[in-house]
Amino acid sequence: MEFVEQFFSYIIALGAAVMMPIIFTILGVCIGIKFSKALKSGLYVGVGFVGLGVITGLLTSSLGPVLNKVVEIYGLELNVFDMGWPAAASVAYNTSVGAFIIPVCLAVNLVLLVLGCTRTVNIDLWNYWHFAFIGAVVYFLTDSIAWGFFAAIICYIITLVLADLTAKKFQTFYDGMEGISIPQPFCQGFTPFAIVIGKALDLIPGFDKLNIDAEGMKKKFGLFGEPLFLGVIIGIAIGCLACRDWQELSDSIPAILGLGIKMGAVMELIPRITSLFIEGLKPISEATRELIAKKFGENKEFYIGMSPALVIGHPTTLIVSLLLIPVTLVLAVALPGNQFLPLASLAGMFYVFVMVLPYTKGNVVKSFIVGLVVMAIGLYFVTLMAENFTSAAAMVSAAHPDDAAVRVPEGFMAGSLDFASSPIAFLIYACMKYLFTWMGAVILTALAVALLVWNRIRINK
Image (cartoon, rainbow, N blue to C red; front, side, top):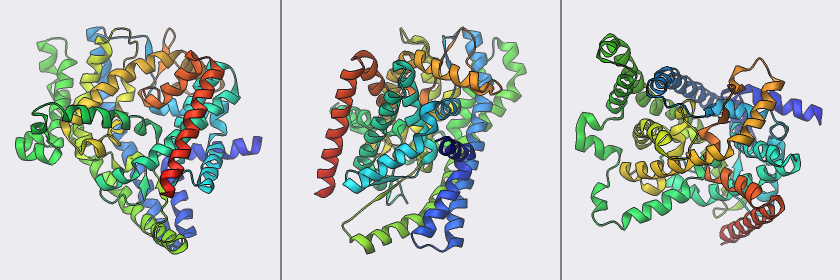
């Protein structure tokens, strides 16, 4: 068991940029692609993750100090500290649940594939930290590692079923994504909101006139509708908010303009970088479909479960995410009872909309309203889960005293937009906390079994 723990800890430590090229190369060779072509595909995916890390790092390093200054000027400090998703992932993987989450979830995936309860083969190993996260939180809630693994497995099952249900919509909306599904619970948790809110908005007379996608914005507003230009404008606006008076504003003009250009660069470069994912993914996807058709017939279909990073470069995602950053800060301060102020987590805002856009058809207004609702609700979820997440972070920090990223400042609790604001995470947490452990477990088990049976029937049809 110690060897297994060390082995998977070593794999996790490689990071997505190294892990995914290795997985893609092995997968490509196994499905009949030449080694050189499989290696090239894997390297494209790895380079994509490196580029995405550089750009999101630019976003965090540029916005972080400015937003901290805004917090200081306007006295916005709340008592749940935003650790950001990288620190949340580190905490999740370094708990007892996280140490074995990859082999446990892979085993569950294999069993469900054999039973015909899912079509998704989830190779997005890095994002298994989401399942480890809810497992760790429930572990510290119940003081039981068994209940921690139970919560992680329930989360995994729900996510696989949602990945199957949304795969066709995802593949139809995004170009070049044939044979791909998104088994990432943070993204999938917002799908029901997109469906319900989208249908509700359609009932409002005249709302159809606001059916503007990213291309429509460019045509309607010209330069002002370009993601690049919006990034520059919003960057400048946030920079201005960080100035106490006119004198400081005047002195800070070079820095403010620099921030605007950096935000514009983020908006322009992310789509270019995500195109590398598609280029690397295409040979694997095509070979997988050919192999399945040959072995099982044309009617049999499996999906490769991949990271949502593949498609976060969509123009609507970029526009709505950037608009929501300042709005979310206002919501955090204005909502009564909320104690979480998102700062480090804001770089992950793009991932909220990956599974929203296929159901809003890229409509900027609809997507923004969905984002507004889920962010308002999500802030409360983070606040309510903070106590047990803080316990997990404190344990990991004690075991790794030199790792400043997992250290929670004294007097604060720990929080993160991803994955603590997810409806799936909170559903599991609430059942285990507020419905007593056994009763909550029975309800969650019944839900998971019902979803699996329904999905199996749907697949067989």
